[in-house]
Amino acid sequence: MSRILVTGAAGFIGSHTVELLLQEGHEVLGVDNFRTGREANLQTFLTHPRFRFLRGDVAEPGELASLSTGFRPDAIIHLAAMVSVPESIAHPAENHRLNFLATTLVADVALAAGARRIVFASSAAVYGTNDALPLSEDATCQPLSPYGEAKLQSEHHLLHAAREHGLTVRCQRYFNVFGPRQDPSSAYSGVISRFHDALTLGRTPTIHGDGEQTRDFIYVGDVARANLLAATMPRVQSGTANICTGHSVSLNQLLTAMAQAAGKTCQPLYGPARAGDIRQSLGSPARAKLELSFQPATSLDAGLATLFAR
Image (cartoon, one colour):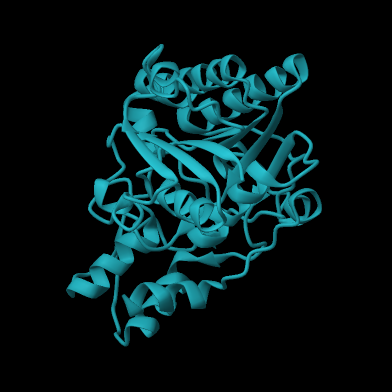
């Protein structure tokens, strides 16, 4: 059993990660300030004997150190972040605070508390526009947004800390994550949750751009398992890995599949493309398989069926 501190524990990915950690027998301290996380996401395990939740802002100097006093984590899974490309463009200073400075504070806490491993929620946004598909971790990184830039800076900072202090750092470059608990009411929500909301409520879905942009969608349960492996697998070395499926679909194809899963037909509205959006996205999952023994287990169709069965 390991003691694991999870920042952003009440979020979409965070809550699924905490739930799986508890199922696998670990002791978990969760921290969240409910900026985008929701208390409802914690309800199924809030009273679990091996889980403790504390409300706090990891981007405030000293706060995470104070909250985690006495816990002595073996690993920290750092998921707390500003989760939106458009928001990072509108508020670059806040993006820098939440997506880079907070990461430096997490690294400081790990060192002070004696944690030996950090798992960091990075993003495919670090690649920017790159035609060398599928993207490997060695591809050139040219972020198009402050969000992607802050994620890349955070990777560099953590991997430097790993070299200097003997930590193990795993930077998880998530592609497009979907599944239960993703909030469709947010203007920055994932496209699958927004399409699901529209189809369920009988509204017309909106696609930003022509719908031919492609994405590599990965189910949140698989992402949680990748986080578990990165935090607890013995003899893991520091590095980065794409957390993806190696398959992509266009948004037009996605909406057709979702309408079929919902037993409906629909014609979307098309709006202007969003600033900072990447046209084509497809990752190679080879390194995650090699270094973490990770392979996605849930297909897009199976994940969509789970969503519409709820």
